Image (tube, rainbow, N blue to C red):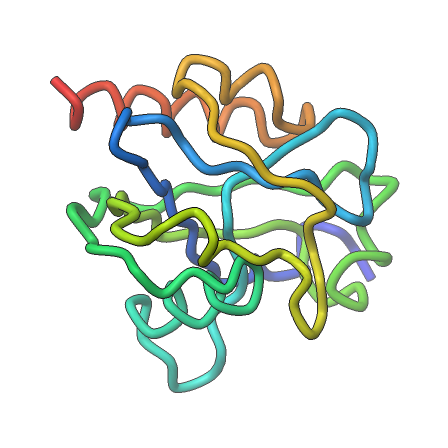
Length: 156
């Protein structure tokens, strides 16, 4: 199949801020090098973005105690590198087109549990927003630079 013909996967992402305006990131189980990402995932058929955010967050982090502060305007896309096309998402997509949200974490850190039914992360931490482009895999760096601009606009 020609790569350009593959569709983009519909997805969501969530920027979770703690009381110090640090951002939640997890180290992916399938890429245990020192690469971290914010919670994100696909949107199921007949699911709205808000429901997808809450489901993905619960599935990846066990977090329930959030308040969505902002839906970031527009969509954000990234393309998979050629070596991952055909491997990730059973080869059905060439990348993701995502709707992103900013939320405040309202719970206690004891609520965060990445040892979920189908774990995606092996570690988690809070980092300053400025660190985001440095910790993400290379093919998502442009996406994270755009998200960083949105975070800075929001925090100012």
